[in-house]
Image (cartoon, rainbow, N blue to C red; front, top):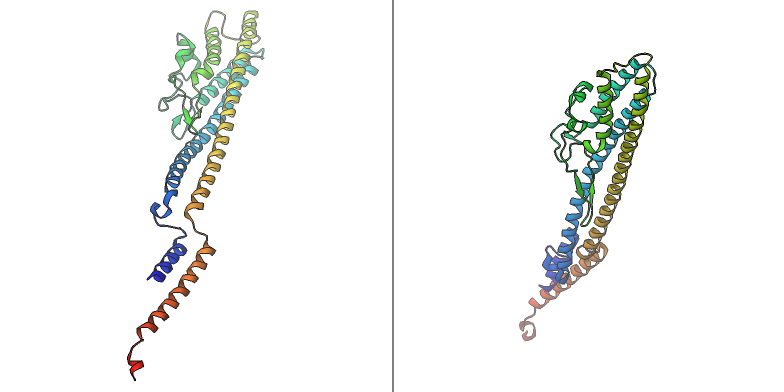
Length: 287
């Protein structure tokens, strides 16, 4: 019976690759396995969150680059002496900026904050913007930027707010639209001295706004690097935990095969011995 039990256990190890079928079989190491499995599950959840955030940041980077490009187009347009051409270019740059700020990823608005089901920008034309009391009224994002927890102690901001990114540049668009509709407009070719003076003064504001947007692009890149580092860290931790659990739970297959063969031999010997003993009788001695 002992030989049969040893053979059965060796056979189980070979077929499952595990030292035991439950935590009772690993004795005092059961607590270590349970804790490691819990840590492994948490690490996998952090990894999944980081992967989702990485794709969002990639989409956000594309949108920010588009916004930066639109502002660059606005800056270039402001160097023209042809007021009519300049306004056409400014209008195109405005639409480019609005489209970038209203970008979506997986059906959610990127720059709406945690209010990702509502379009961040309320205006669709320069005349709409000019009609507002202030440039800040063009935004309807909330004030909560999305964040993600990438490990037990680290939380990263992965979202940007349209109002934080673009209030200054929308203020420039608004001043240009108001000037165009005011007593000194519309812009003509060649521009008047008053128009030229306005353009030169506003260009400085546009350059400052563009620098702010470029800084946001840089911050998005920093967040991408943090997420990438976190992803690698979580994967390394999962590899370590998986290896540690394996060291406790998994059998050495070569060693298990040797034990199986030894147990098989022991069972064969036991069976032969038992068979021999069952044939022993006093009749053989009485004959």
